[in-house]
Amino acid sequence: MVISLIVTAFWAMLPAYIPNNAAVLAGGGRPIDGGRTMGGRRILGDGKTWRGTAAGTLAGLAVALALNVVQPTLSSLVGFSLPSFPVAAGFALALGAMLGDIGASFLKRRTGRERGAAFPGLDQLDFVVGALVLAFVLAPAWFTATFTLPLLAVVLVMTPVLHVVTNVGAYVLGLKNEPY
Image 1 (cartoon, rainbow, N blue to C red):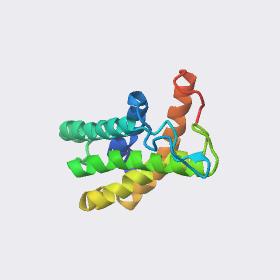
Image 2 (spheres, one colour):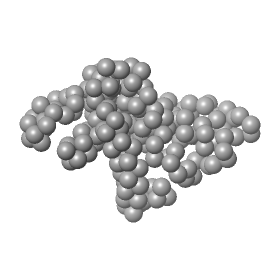
Image 3 (tube, rainbow, N blue to C red):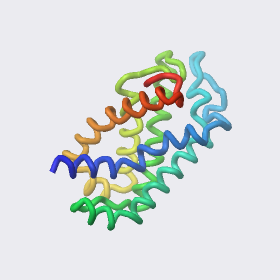
């Protein structure tokens, strides 16, 4: 039961876990805020670009569609049904993750934090909240059937742990300048 919850939570969140990483790889280009400031600080900063947002959203949607292809086989292998992703749900999880991260960047700038500065709690869950909210709005029936309260609890506990582990790993491998 616990293993199936963890596996299902990870599976259901994969389209939201991928976008920010894909955005970094495809990053660069024109910043969303166009260099504008608010209160003497950048609105978002150079790290939030139109290209990165589009690439991240498309990557997350592509992951959702790829998971749909392997879902029947993997469900048989693990012995329980993994959710499939309607296009609206895959799109919402991916774009919502990007929007959550953009919202966190806005909050970081308002609190005087520089790009890359740690903001514990927000850094680990910003994209999750964005993904879940947009999935609820764009695919409500799928969302309520997929994200039961126990599954949501697993997502909210598992995601910060995954975030810390992957960031430390990327730092150790020299892919990130800071371990958070």
